[in-house]
Length: 166
Ligand SMILES: CC(C)(COP(=O)(O)OP(=O)(O)OC[C@H]1O[C@@H](n2cnc3c(N)ncnc32)[C@H](O)[C@@H]1OP(=O)(O)O)[C@@H](O)C(=O)NCCC(=O)NCCS
Image 1 (cartoon, rainbow, N blue to C red):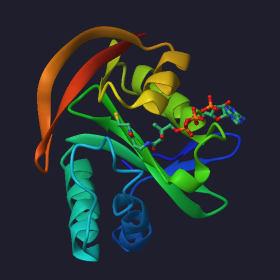
Image 2 (spheres, protein in one colour):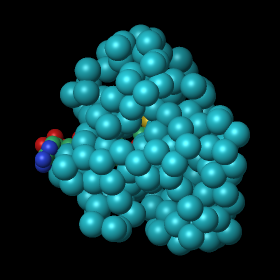
Image 3 (cartoon, rainbow, N blue to C red):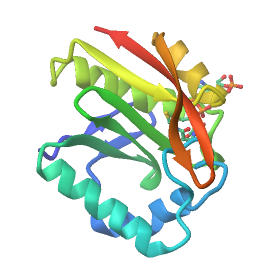
């Protein structure tokens, strides 16, 4: 469904194939990708495939992702996947201005409203302090932890699980 979510400063809209170059700038950024579930992309083709897979998953009803625009420029992505799990990634250049929080609040309202979810979950690297601060401010609470849940290159990462109930 071609849903668009609007906030005071942002527009959340569905991904398009031509977003690949703008998304590559974020997906290849070591700081943005530090606690992501994959290593930073090194080739534009990886980001083209990532955007194409996201579009396919959306069409198949397997995810509910939005790309986030500020004044027509793509600054990140935020959405739901695996049913009720929230996922998001923003360009470091826009961190610290409340954009992620504004976008996530719109995704949360969409999840609890249009989608009728009972809860929204998150899986975060415990070292990802910015992300934990953001989710806590939005009302998420820790539900558990697990060790060695992701292998990134040679290094294992742990998970802290959080949830927000409707
Ligand atoms: C996690 C991530 C989205 C957090 O981004 P962020 O910009 O720090 O988050 P927010 O939008 O909540 O911004 C909060 C900051 O903006 C400040 N701010 C400025 N203007 C604001 C406004 N109008 N409204 C709200 N906050 C505002 C807040 O005071 C806060 O500052 P602080 O970090 O010094 O406490 C970002 O670091 C990111 O994309 N990381 C990489 C991907 C990632 O790790 N994803 C999570 C995987 S689970």
